[in-house]
Length: 351
Image (cartoon, rainbow, N blue to C red; front, side):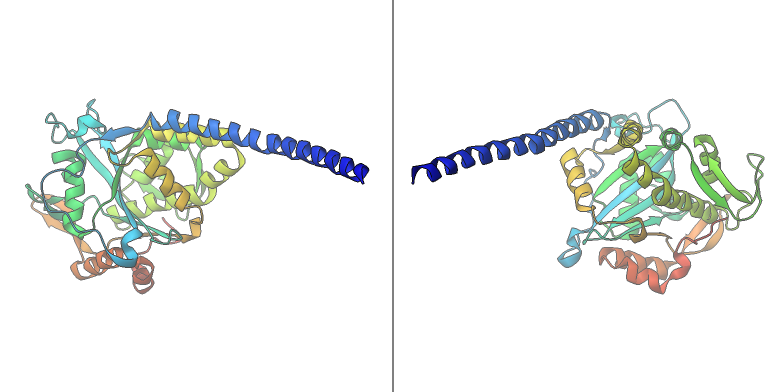
C-alpha cells in the first residue's frame, strides 16, 4: 500500500514542478509585457501636452445625456494652423497672453463614440460656418479658437449644438505631416484630374502615395474643388478614412516597433484637456476593442449653402437639418439619422 502512496507523491511532485515551470513560462513573458507596456505608457503619456481651463468660464454647459445614451462619448477634434511662433496648444493656449489672430482651427470635427462602443461618427463642421461666438457676436466658427483658444472653441460648439463635449484633442499640421511620413505615406485615389490654383499643383487622375507635405496639400486644397470648403472637408475625411482603413491598422498589427514610432510622433504633437487622464484614455481604448473601421461613419453637418456676410465668404447652416442631427447625437442615434440623410455622408469617391 505504501508504494502506490510514494508513487502518488512522486507524481504530485512532478506535477507541481511541471505546473511551476508552465507558470514561469506563462507569467514571465506576461510580466515582461506588462512592464514594457507600463514603460510605454509613462514614456508616451509624458509627451502629451495638457490644456488647462478647457471647460472653465462660468457659463452654463449642456447637461450630460441621461439613460441609455449616457455612456456615449463626444470629443471635439481640432486641427490647428499656426501663424506665429507662439504655441498653438498646451497651457499657454489659455493664458491671458493669448494673441487673437495668431492661431486658428483649420479643421473641426466632433467624434461621437456610441454607447455600445461598436460604432462611431466623425462629424465635420466647415471652418467658414457662420455662427454665434459667445462674447464676440456672429463670425466664422474657426474664429473662436483665434479669439479665445480651446476654451472658447469648446464653448462655441456646445452653444451651437447643445452637445456636452467630454474631451478635447488638438493636433497641429506639423504633427499631421510627421504622422503621415511615419506611416511611409498614405495612398489616395484621385478620380479626376484637378488643379489647385492657390498652390499651382495639379493632381492627375489615378493613385497617389502621398508623403506628409503632399498630404497637407491634398487635404488643404479649396480652389478647383466642387463645393469649395465642403469639398475640402470631404478630402480631409477621405484621407482619415483611408488612413484608418488601410494603413494604420496594418502598421499596428504587423509591426509593433512602427506602431510605437507612430504613437511617439502622435503624442509629441497632441494636446488634450487636463481632465483627460491617461487612465481614462486607456479605459476608453480598451472599451473600443470591438470597434472596426466599417463601424465608423463620416459626415458633415447639413448646410443651406454658401453666401456673403459683409466681405466674408461663409457657409450657412441648414437649421432644421442640423438641429435634427444634434438631437440624434444626444440620443446616440447618429446611424439612424444618417440612414435618412445620406446626402450628409462623405462620398465613397472623393474628388
